[in-house]
Amino acid sequence: MEMQTAEGDIGILIQIVKQDFEIQKNRRVLEEAPVRIKEINKKVKEMDEEYEESQTVLKKLEKEKIRLEENVKYHNSKVAEKQSEQSRVKTNKEYKALTAEIAYLLKQIDQEEERIITILDQMEAKRKEVGAITSQIDSERGALLDEKRKLEEEIKVGTERLRVLEDEKVRILSRLSNLVLHLYNRILKVKRDSGVANLIGDICQGCYTRIPPQKAHEIRKNSKIITCEGCGRILVYYQVDAGST
Image 1 (cartoon, rainbow, N blue to C red):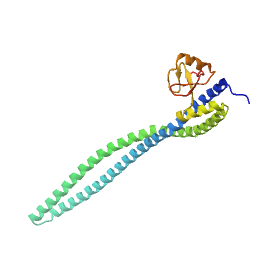
Image 2: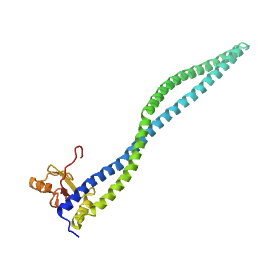
Image 3: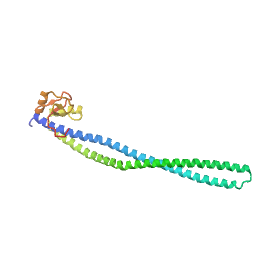
Image 4: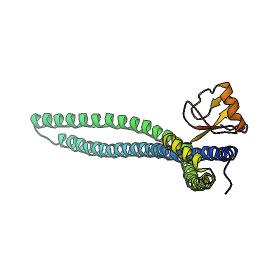
């Protein structure tokens, strides 16, 4: 078997750092998407709970209003009865007693009618609140659920894409010389993202350390294995497409 040259190893390492970049990009999506889905679920739940709470308050107010209206109706009927009795009593004492009862009933009616007016104001305010919540749900809930569905699809696609990328990386790594493969794996174990980094200008893209000009010049030749003094990653050089990071 022909011995792997440093240039050959570096060519493979360039493929690996590109592969590592794509792997990390996919992992970020798989890490960030569930967090956003959780935020969306929380927001949707809050909107639904706020709507349900407002509806519950409205129902309670309506129930109280109906009860008070029945009380007013009942107390008015009792007033009518007492007034009818007054016309038939024969003593002043009985008349005064009925007058006191009527006054008490009328006071009850006034309090109940005042409370009904207050409830009507509260119900109007609550209906406006429900309307605002409904508008928010109509305008935001659908968009949030659409975003959630897209994120779930991204997770599904990203998971498969990550599997493919990692399988491809294994095949690429197998082409490295044993010495460089060992070095890469040792660095990867510490750094976790990649054991190799690109040089852009004179900056290591693994740790953003500035590389001395002479060393940067040697790295750009891609003719021997050179590591970064800042992070320990193997440094390679390749031109990055416009818009890539």
